[in-house]
Length: 118
Picture 1 (cartoon, rainbow, N blue to C red):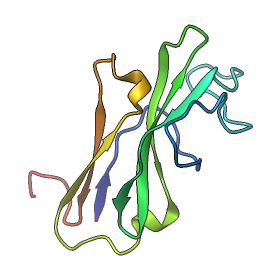
Picture 2: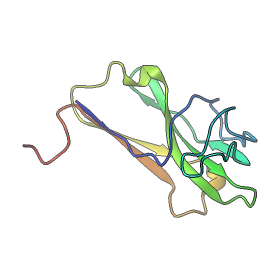
Picture 3: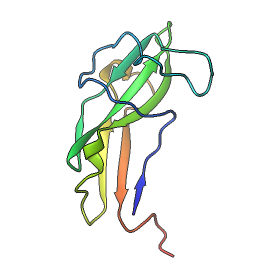
Picture 4: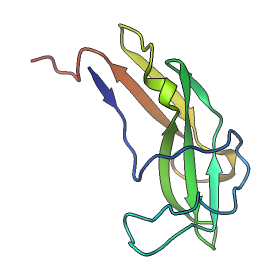
């Protein structure tokens, strides 16, 4: 089984709104810039159903409100009771970053592996 998931940073658990969070959860370190902690703003998009849980997108902004990270947050239950067939879930980015070139993330579930078949 394969869950194709592209992120530019790690995952974490957070509230379910698209309002600015002020900063990332305590202790979140930027893997691209070690020692740099807690971005100026942490935004989350609308949760979408996946398995028995949810998946949502998040974006961090710097002090100039320029996106620095884009990623997804999966609840633990999102990996339970996934279908036997392929599934794609379109996860919208928070509306506050609508001016960027990216407006969604696609999360694919491929229980038989990624194409092409061996």
